[in-house]
Structure formats: structure tokens, C-alpha cells
Length: 88
Image 1 (cartoon, one colour):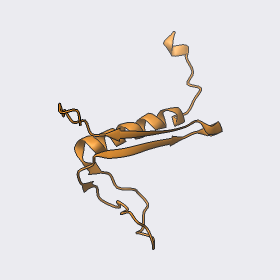
Image 2 (cartoon, rainbow, N blue to C red):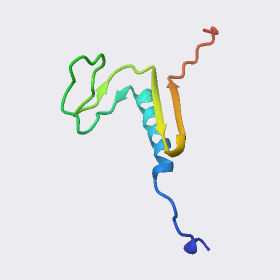
Image 3 (cartoon, one colour):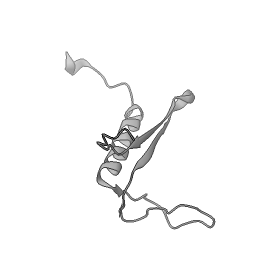
Image 4 (cartoon, one colour):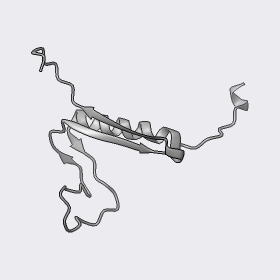
């Protein structure tokens, strides 16, 4: 019976798919979500931190990285779909 099944894991296994879904939505909607608990840009950074509010921009590609115990790691590059029939 389903009532007798005990949950014997954490949400860590599902965290990777949550991040992948957020990355797909970022590319699809062109809106980069903010990073919480970020005070400001550090000296020498060559990229913009997104803090406090999302930024609308044309996102062509994004990376979703997941790191787990014992080297269970993955990196997926997600790109915007184009229906280009020219073969490019």
C-alpha cells in the first residue's frame, strides 16, 4: 500500500532537475532571476551579478550545473530553440 511507503531520501536528488527547469525557463522567457544574499560586485569581476531584481535580456544559452556526493556531477548547456531551416 502507498500509505506504508516511507520516504527514505532527501530533496537533494531532485535539486538538479529543479535547477535545470529554472535554467530552461530563464532561456525561454529571457529573464535572469536574482541571486539572494548578494551584497554587490567584487573587484575584478568580469560579469554582472544579478541581485535584488530579475533582469530581462536575450538569453541564447545557459549552463545548469549539479554537484553531488562521491563525484556525481553534471553540466548541461541549454540553448534557445530556433526553427532555422537553412541548416545553419
